[in-house]
Image (cartoon, rainbow over all chains, first blue to last red; front, side, top):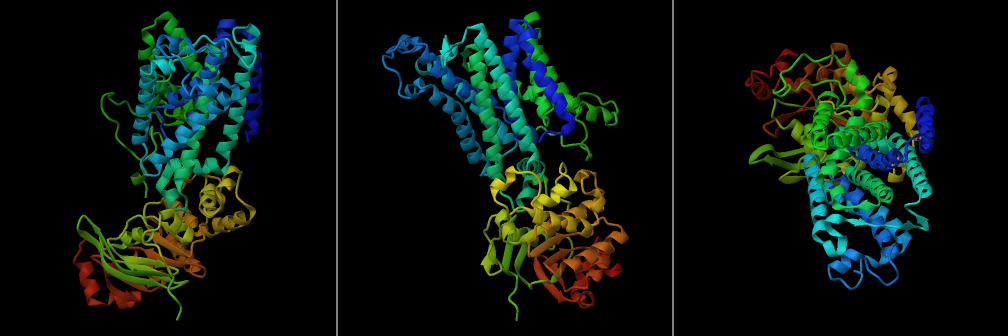
Length: 370
Length: 254
């Protein structure tokens, strides 16, 4: 459960966010809504990367799948009966493709946005982890997947809407999406989902599963020689991370009214890592905080100087990895450590055994451990 | 005659043609201690690696409680009842001392029990006992990374005991320990032999002498000599193997 000392703090934060519609402009509220959706994904990434030690450079894939599953329904729901989406007509299709048909049913779409990302993630993770491949190789595989999916979606214009993605939605389950009251409801829905996901993740990391996950991160081989097969646990946490990413993608699609390949490729996937790294990768509260800070920062910087953001993002990543391995929530611990002597910045730091928490970006390879 | 708990039959392990273990046979009786000694590269650690499935042999068989485990996955070997302490302490840094022991103790619990908090009552009792056994009672909730080296060694011995395996493999349990700690470790090993079988590797002959158990000398992947420490020590072949190596003078000095 939540630690008692932190509970009033979380309650206060939740109350503050709940009153946000009264406190901030509609523009900022809409930003906050979509960033809270991102934070749901960041919670999943914290479980996968911070606790499980599995670096995923392809969370955008699962975000996108969740988004597309819901968007397919929204697109169909906005059509008069018997018609097919506009981009299909332009591409010369006369009939709805078979895999689109079930998405007429909103409940099918709701189930799919959970199941499609989770099952794809579980399948991929099992194929890789049961062969005992991991670490950097898994990160590269997920990045390749992000590239492959975004390229595939763009190339299949008649079936996916191509580069423009899916947009022009009108209503969902009877709610008109453009209505300001619906926008508020959607904000509160996002906040509620985030709060539930937060509580669930807090519970999970303190359970025996969470302890085992931390143990697998610190010494996968040791855990194996204590009588555990790590593969099912790694697969489970990766699938859970993907499920949360899919949920975030669906909420994001409702907020913004569009899902497109630009939102799910390699660059967005790396940005997601940065949210979590900035907040502190092994802290759930840090994941939410980092997501909000980085995204509001991005909005602020890109509206002032559009070209600057990519550079700032790169610098931020370097700063966090080199100077603040625990992110903002690990700031206290980073400051308490003795200040290292000045080192020339272009030389590799010497590797010294230290008692500080493991700071490598990916979990140590099995061979490192006895 | 009692059936052996573990039987190593004509085992050969080769690394790119180099035979780390060469036609070795060995058997371990229930509730007994066996000490393995030998110069560096004699194949002691490789033998333990092969028993727990970390290394697969080119030839031969390993039979545990009548079951051939030569090709069994590592985690299943542990579940059958063999657990190993590694040479460099293999503890889980981020978990507390208690959590390390709890993890080792509950490996046979079903997967759904992992979605609960804490340790089951029956296992808690056992883990608390082990905390006393390994002298880490006052470090119960400290993170494992904060322990001193000797305490890390003890924690890992504790984890191996907590797994409740019938056969415990201890690779250099007394390495890097102070004089007093070595004595305590020897006493601990003797206490454990009331309930478990143990195979112990160590270079420290004072420690080996305190164990007062049969010794097997390994050399170039083969069994050179078996017997009590005194018998082994007075064997001219053993002496020449050790004296032939400058860095291994431990036997003569002890």
